[in-house]
Image 1: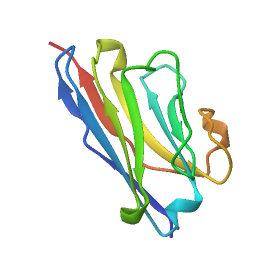
Image 2: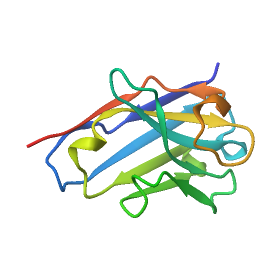
Image 3: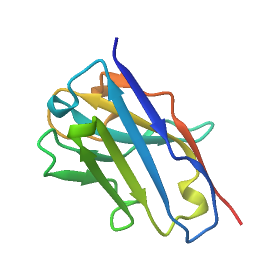
Image 4: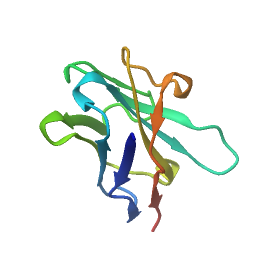
Length: 123
């Protein structure tokens, strides 16, 4: 049974940083592209970042490029999203997802999802 579990969410002040984790089990994570998404109530889930199965190429939404960094540690079946210079607009539930195929920040292309972790940016 495939399980994706996010961790690391919390409350942070504007300008602060946070590091989210994603752990996969029941699958061989090195074979999968990993994506990060976020959602706020009343809005559609949006793609934030993606990292290829090879761990080299990465993809970012315009709203986070230069502030967020995605990485993966296949030996430990994990991935991370390091977020810096956070603003209240970054508030939301952050989801990790995996897919077989190239990088993408389209939520419709992902096969397995975690339950999400809440990030709140507020003073």
